[in-house]
Length: 157
Image (cartoon, rainbow, N blue to C red; front, side, top):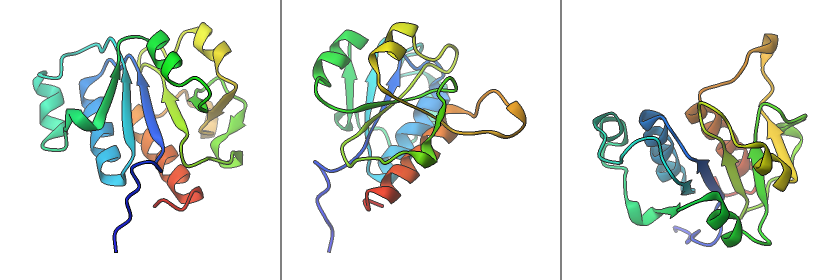
């Protein structure tokens, strides 16, 4: 028996993504694991970009992706909803955090993260701990790690 999890799923939000292949890989991950994807524009590429299309294959369904014209629109829509920012600047590990079924997990731009004003707006900031002071993982890998943990904790996987 399949469950309708339409209203019970984490949401992955991307702030102004700028690498088409990463965004395409995240779309595939969200589609395969049943998460909703939200994109805060502007993107640093067009959805018709051949690098994007090569990776996204037939997993792209624009009806399953919510687009916001700006971070202001995103935060207006998310008022009274929990947003979790994934950032290398956080002090709390994702493994020490309790995810909820309707969380929105926000990832910054590959090239620059999110602006300081967004860091200040978001109470919950988490990181993926890394060995040997490495700088960061690829965003598509990071999304997969965090989404899997969120789904596991909320019994949606």
